[in-house]
Image 1: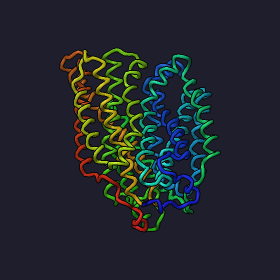
Image 2: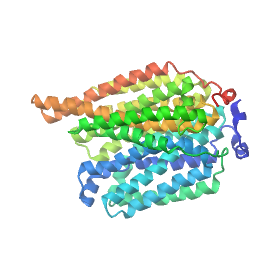
Image 3: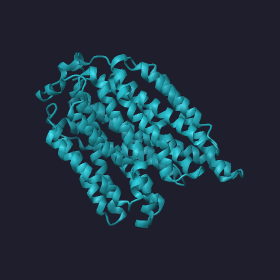
Image 4: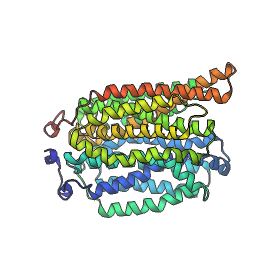
Length: 485
């Protein structure tokens, strides 16, 4: 059993098999609230444009900046989580989040609101890897799938709920209400967490390498920013920013490799020596691209082509998102019993089938059919994500958990930005070329969307191929702790 790896007295209490430890419940709740905020602004854009007298492009920054901050901060969290206690990391994450939320409620101008979103995102960036790392330390291996299923619930349902929830809240008041509703809930969770949370593991001493921080921020932040600017006239500039981002990431990687010899890299790349972890990472990135692409295309299709309101579109995709979340724990239990392949291979096939179905949407596709395909997509993703997270992190030795989580989180943000940029660019390019040939605007846009779904379906074939490379169970890493140290 790998539970010998547990290294602090605080854990003995949580070893009761089969129950989700209270600390994980609290962290899942906190993560749900902070991730919800990544997508809560999507529906508020028209309100914000009126209230703050800004253009749509400017308003989009409230979501883009959130994603950018996550991409820039998450690479630092692996190092940070090894240096501070669990309680310290939790207090930092939730403190930043509360500060950002409170500032957003009273923000007098767009600039202040943007600053508040950046502070919120910094807290969110610490929360995700903190949850994953604590889970890997506290939960014995034979229960990890089930508990990770609950985590998937938070991570997948929250972004999907954001737009629908904000649609409801905005019926009752201004955009400030979005933050005013979240603040007391987040404050309660923070208070509960600090009362219950015990420290897991021992913080290590160590200095931070500021060059790595700068390279990570430039690299991952630049890459995500460049990708988010690909649509429109400044595609050339965007390509330049992406190139600079990639150069900075290359420099960052070399810097980490040289720091590993000294023993304190910002992001420990030795995690990538574990084959299962690396396969899981590739699979998750590609699946994330396909998922986010569809999360952006479907509302566009429903609102711009089929004429639904933002709230109606949000409600139409709600059943799929809820199904994904509710299935998380059952998928986790199946994983604990049968291993990963049984779930990931059918799951990835379901993703491909759903995306292939969506390549056929038309002006008159019945809404129940779209709901069905979206639900199939989400169920496929549920069957894929939980086992992939669990197998991937389970393949890494415990001293590298925080780095494994932080690399996973960073790649999620990059994959999300890349998937979004890819589908939007393909869709716009195709629609523009058809409009030049004299095709009506709606028909041209629809055709562009179909082509973008074709790209998503093609990406998902890569998920099936990668799924075949995964083992059924994580190789035990209890013996491999000294590896590379």
